[in-house]
Image (cartoon, each protein chain N blue to C red):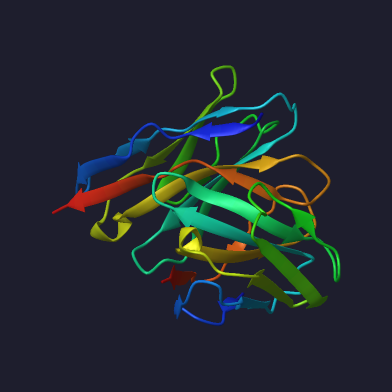
Length: 116
Length: 113
């Protein structure tokens, strides 16, 4: 069965430093996609970054990068130069199955606190 | 700007009541989803729909039903609310295409007393 594991319930980082949020996944599919979402205290889920299983380069979006290690089945999110506004819950997710349905399975999340 | 709108931010209902959670998207997306979010469990898929009048069960459909009469609207129905359905409910939509992101509503925090 497909599964996403986020082993860090909570993390903290000093402002302006980089932080890595861990995500490991389990799937027998050859084609899959990995997503990271941010959920501030207001509740909405904000899409951050996507990595396809066949992408050879690690995905980057501004201060966010995804450290994709396919053999280890890990897809860690790296946030560079942390800002106070980065304090939020972060969820790793994987597309389940194919065919355009885009069902996602989510990890339990990591709560990040950025300290001034 | 893309938008998924859920009808309520907060709801309090009594045990046994029939509860409707409404979701509307303005992006002409084929796929719509209802997730439930609980601490330590992340988001779990209740139901999804890939077309009008089409619906598929997710991982935790028991106690819920859905309706999609129009492309832009996807309703979650709790037939007889119970206290273990107290949770945050999130609606999402996406294109019917692999590996495109889902857009989420602001969530509805439902309390069943």
